Image 1 (cartoon, rainbow, N blue to C red):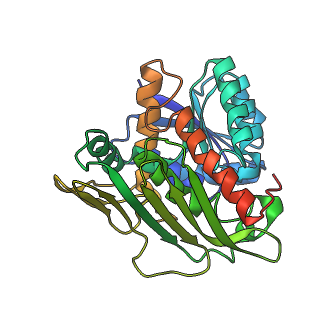
Image 2: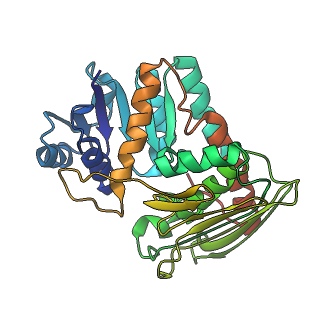
Length: 333
């Protein structure tokens, strides 16, 4: 079965996703249409990738009978409404993260997916990376022993990006790069609810966080210390380490889309294919892993992907809600 995709949004991340979809092996996924806020944007995107159909609206993607699954890559203030729109139109959905501003919004979308009996996944692509899947297996098998400490750092200078600074555009770092650090902690601690969450952040003049530090404390005394910043680049320190009583996992640079990691069982690595169009972001070829996860789930008749389940997203946003509350940020979307 070739999975037929409709794409919503003609921006940089959608470009990377489509290029990853069309990377070798190239006979697994097909992009049948692209929808954007204007026909001109959609046609330019279509021409770049050889997509036959370009729509100047997202409603036309929802109505296209040839679409099996929709990828939502528009600005995230529209994720909730568009996810519900596509699900109600009978489409399976892969929605870029963050899928919502809060746990309440996450639950709202998930409920629609359940009612429509369609697959829905938040595009936390890290979880679909073979290295993450192997780490998860090692942790669940007890090879690290009891997890005592997780630390992750994500520093990338994107404070001048218009979207990041403006609350009306869903601005702030915790919903963006901060989410990657939180998802690692929730995966390692198996969605356990922390007994204590402590968060601090630097807010901009417009009231959105530009950097932050989150400490999660769990009932066994284990902790996760998560640091993120949009204000500066810190060399190759975008790494993560997991400490257990029996062993340690070290995830190298770009921990959210790693090429290698060191586990108690030895070093592991994976290769990322180049697509037909150069990627805008580091290692975006890894987006292919989540597309393949979607395909396997649809073929198996599942409405959730095991790599990013509904419970996984819920565990993440329970923490996000508390962080937002503690740092005094008020999401405007």
